[in-house]
Amino acid sequence: GGPTEDVRGAAHLTVQKRKWHPGVLLFISALLCSTVTLVTGCNKALCASDVSKCLLQELCQCQAIEGNCSCCPECMLCMGNLWDQCCDCVGLCSKNKESRKHSARRSSLEELPVPVPSLFRAVSSMQEGESALGWTSHSLPIREELAQSTHMDHILLGAHSVVTASPLTNTSDFCTVLYFNSCMSMRRCHQSCESVGSTKYRWFHNGCCQCVGPDCHGYGSKEPICRQCQTKEMMSEGKRERATV
Image (cartoon, rainbow, N blue to C red):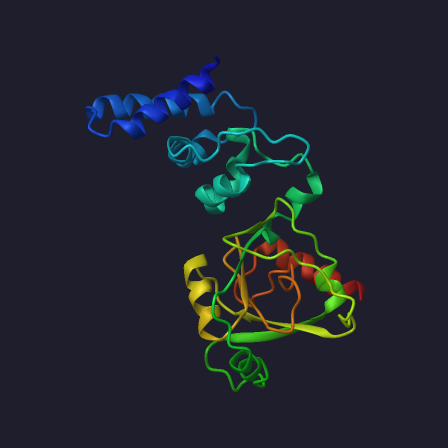
């Protein structure tokens, strides 16, 4: 086996024997950090600590073959906001340049157990200025929502149903979602969307939180357009798009 396999073996032993001498643990951490530098394009100074943590938990130990990556969802969640800069350290970065260009749109999605459609509709129908809670509503055509495919950049969490359109679906209808203005954690996004009666939530990895309404057939919009939670790149891109309309 190569150095990576040796490191993973060491990581596994570390998990099993937590009472080892601190010096041994420091040695293993140093070995993990040195392995990081063997990978081209890996930023050791930025990534070593988080990559070590995720390898120790055995969350990033697979190969991405032709876009199929069984461990990417767990590894991505483990690394969090550092995924884009550090996925090269474990050899799991997408080879699709367009996908990486729009990585700010990466998101985690989950269905909520007890939706309250009437509450969501009441909240989303509030006029801007009435809501003191800091959200905005957005509507998109059902056909646009259903055209979005779930791929490696959009992770489905927990139990979920396959998104399909029934023959009776009117694709000219609209799907309404709520965006909280400020950035928040995934846990807070989950709780916030539950509090407004949402059926699902979509948490973008830049911190933008979207609550999906009962009239949606999939997972809402793929765009993270929270007013106070956008990267500089996305804001400049949005300005360019508006200028061309």
